Amino acid sequence: MLTVRQAALDDTQAISRLFRSQITAWQRLDDRGQVQDVPYEALTIYERWLHGGTWMSIETAALQLSHLLHGAGLPAVVEAGGQVRGYSEAYYGQEPAPFGVHLHLAHLAAEADDAGLQDALITGCLERAAALKCARVTVSCLASDQPSRSVYERHGFEALARVRRFNLPAKTGQVFYRATEHLDANPEQIRDWYMPVGRTGSARQQWETLWPRTWFAIPELRNQRAHRLHFSVAGQEAFVYCQQQLYLPRCADVFIWSPRPLSPQTLAAVRDWAHREGYRTLTMIVPDEAAAVLGAEAEPDGYALDIYATPV
Image (cartoon, rainbow, N blue to C red):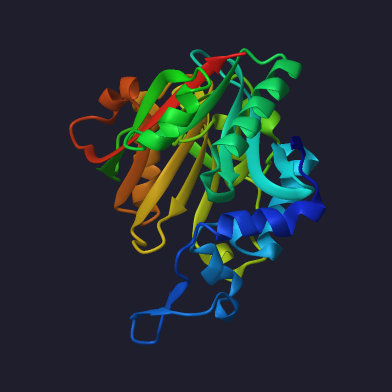
């Protein structure tokens, strides 16, 4: 008998254990820059984070689960015999077509990739979407990940969109704009907005992951440059999150939310601002239809992600 229910803070340890079980080796760099295998207990919270993010430590897992339970997302677990054996995480979103009102299934983890546990979690997500009157459930999947695609296709998911990753130079441009710091993390600000750059999950998922300053308690994450900005350019506005890459400090990952699709003016403004901040290369993930806006200087790196959807 499998039971799917909303996750609770008491589930934190079990959920973290599910994600940690996917890590085959715990490692860190020594003083000479050499990789060394170490016991999990010997790693700092930040070193554990580097292996897979929030669920790698009980401390950060509790913060994440609390954030979700306060309204950021919809965490759920599947139990068998009174034991948590799987976890899913979904985000309610309202965006322009083709996504519309949807529930995005962002994470799916089950013991030993058990198909029955995965099916129970996906079915639970579909039922939750119906209760929320969503038009569809969406999920992201690497174009090369055939096993995951097979799981979703079994539940009626079909390809809806594809995004690809590009690198392009930051450079000064002849464009008038205003960029100001914007720390308000209320997701209502992006209701019915596009996410033309950086949408690897959903606009709401990316917002809840990036905009709140949840991880400022970890010094290494606090010290990594991250900019939360409101842009006004050519009569348009946009929220832009720009984050310095971990191992390439002159490079930055860019995420954009806007009431309109990506425009050349917004792109020029972001490139100009980034150049003035000392960045030289910007990494942007965009849907196929927006790739032309990036121009001839943009170089694809081969990364492609498909977004699948099934009607509710």
